[in-house]
Length: 198
Image (tube, rainbow, N blue to C red):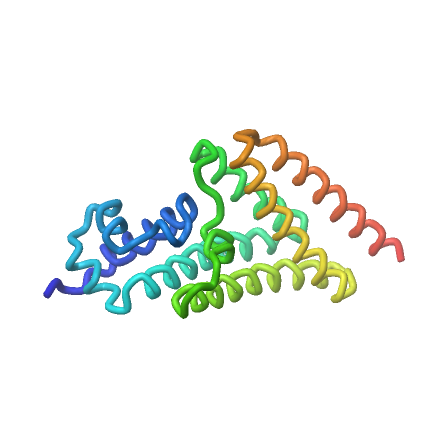
């Protein structure tokens, strides 16, 4: 039985996240993961004894943690900086992969709940979305926006970014993402200005 190698295990999780953002959950299997990561199939099952369910959940959490860390750091400079960072992350993804990849979290969330594995993956995705929403809404509230509106704005930012990713992948054109970014930035700056003049 192979020894535990944290770096090899992390590489598998990162590869799984990349597969999810490109192919979705149904097209991501342990065998394909091992092949993509250039890892022995046996060691892959060793690292993930609970199979595909475990891999997908860990990949979703990996992606969620990575974005959360970047978002949290940028929010230290204010809500506008946080929003711009969040949007730029996804713009970079869609462009760097030539419109072949999006967000692994939304990819999992869009899968039909046909069994317990998918339902568990949905729960993991929901927790990630809630974490991103909480980070954004807390930052907005700290800048004086009423909490209920801050919650709604944060949800809209996430939903808008995810929707723009889908449009860009379909059209093979970044224009939709840039249009969404411009409108979200305008809305946030206007909202903050109105809040500060009250």
